[in-house]
Image (cartoon, rainbow over all chains, first blue to last red):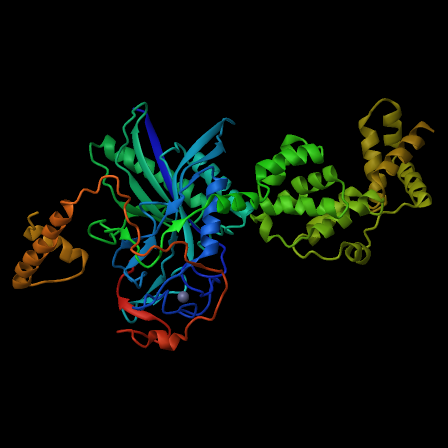
Length: 477
Length: 96
Ligand SMILES: [Zn+2]
């Protein structure tokens, strides 16, 4: 029997606000335990939480970008559960009237076609604290620095069929949120976290199977592997005549497997009720218009503009706009005076090459646009040959050193001295008379060899164009 | 609505309460009284009435996103039933 995997995602994204959702404590990452806390975020009795206006704005921005409907009358609810990561014994979240519903995210599938992933809802909520078990005390230490950090949770419909689709969606979501500036989406620091709901069913069936929820997925690679493992596990269970249990499972990176988690509550009964401390939100048409007007230029719009304004091919425009940091880098190069297509070529070839070799994201790169622009203009002005420029680029990529200085110190400047070139040609021809004879008897290959030898004689610093010409002239002369 | 012993056990479990047999009897009676009061409210015709999400006629109470200093940790930890120098301590809750 062939099986189909059905996947839905719940993604928690930490918002890039300066302060927490209901108090003025900083959201800065790190800090000694319980030093970014106050009576509000540690749930002391008698305190009054007040919503951070930036949280609403960011949620609305994200909702608009994900093509969702904004809930004009919206409110918060309490989700009750006893677990020490929440000092109040409830999480302020949204159940009945989430801020966004019915979004749509188009993704590109493996076959190159477009597929729309439906967003069921997007809601605002607060993050929980961090628990660390102390084996000496046999007690759990509670650090509430993350408690009250604003999150949006984005819930999709069960629209994914493969892990490739899941990753494509997450890449798209991450890029969108980074373009909006509502989150930095750093998976390692936990500012983008993903729970995967997965079930299997016989291909062609329209009924959903029993699903499990997988947690602790801290990288795209982990997500892909967990999906592969979990669908196999469920298929094997069913084929052995056993049942899939609806449960939460934890992905263990080292063991490459999922394990059933001891549930937080014996029953998942959160007894939601309206949050009495936070007055409801009424979103006016003016407010929505204002947020819409201030939406930044998104990837799709940049793609169109790059093709029109800079005459770039679709492929280039798409590559440059996938990561906001890369698009910003490209635009800075152009602003600094570099030619658009030249900049695009360097970014797609060398910059992306270095990033992928170093498994880095564009936003973490040290190299500045002005360094690349200097390098491009040195090549253009004939002060550096292109091959040397690529080597210089690789050398300064991590340090962002002054390239003019680097070229001077390492003696890499292009030699544009015709006398030196002529001398090199003489020397090479004298030493390789056989190759000269070969070429003249029709062996084209010998030409390339001679050019290479001259370039070598010039220590790689000659202008390749000039070397070509000099060798050709000598051969025909 | 009839409140059963199972319902009381379930609510007690969710609330992390461990009532003894005598308290359970008392709770059953009290809960039944509370729930039957809802029947009084059900007499009212609420068709076409918007659900009330807040008792006060206020909306959109928000603050600007400006950091102010947090609370001294020592002060925060003062009321903790169990603590060390830097954290609240709770009974073992983490796996592993
Ligand atoms: Zn606080």
